[in-house]
Length: 407
Image 1 (tube, helix red, strand yellow):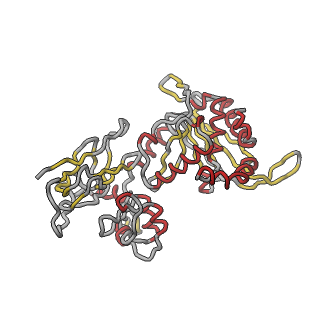
Image 2 (tube, rainbow, N blue to C red):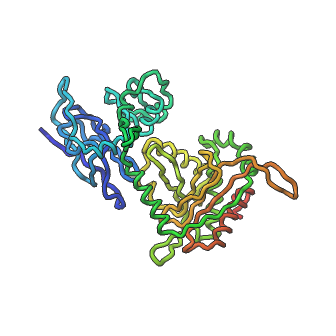
């Protein structure tokens, strides 16, 4: 017998502990080197734990739903053993009921075949469509079912396995059905940070409207050639990023942060882009956004969206940031007051562009209007800087050629 340990990956300094989700192998099963054994949920991302070497899974030390820390032993592999011809599946260590509920909050769909394993995003899609992971040929690493595979599934097979991961309704005191599911680590962390932001920041929000016609015309003129040349669609978010950076350069307080009684002025522009994922809201960072082209920004945002859906964003990509942009418009939002992402001091809320009647030169005309909202920390940012900063974003969007000339 030659046992080697399977360890929890090194977590970042800001993460004290994590939660094991569902083991994909049981004791006695053969494993290949680098085969994913389990996923670990932190308050920021889901990490995959691969087998360090090939062999047989000899022991599961920490069961589904267990709380773990960096470098903790969670299983052991016998590199000298061979799997039995028909091994009986031994159950993993039992987890507390609350931990089972936590695992149910981020289910991973599996079939009876160990290769038919879905990413968290794919599992949710399959469950919503009522499709079983069994029989789906995954295009990901090691046969993993990706979000694209799940979207392409035809729904001809029932998702008995996936549905079983959702706790059955129980009855409340008055006899009506309800479900109790523990928050995922990510959801609990989001709740904590948003509450912290409202308690510690003096948040005010200023609004303005922007005529998006110039950006729409520019996009319509070049979108086909842009996609052909750069391999990515030309969206609107890159224009908002560029407009925000232009305003932050003029009004550096909006790009600053508070540290105790000090104000830290950042000489760089790391823009957080709020992205929805099956596990909740995440905010990956566009580093040095002022040095990125429109194409660079669009490529990174597309990559963020895809990897957020598959739970593949790294910890380093979600850390830091000097300013954030939240686009509720993709969900149809008309107006909102975004909450600052600490320790940042401001956030831009972007909303749905709709044709609205506006007055120009004494005449009522129809224009594609987007309402912008800038929430800011009034402890260091006065109304003047906030209003002028938002006006600078509006002017850049209404005359996007200014961005090319750095005006």
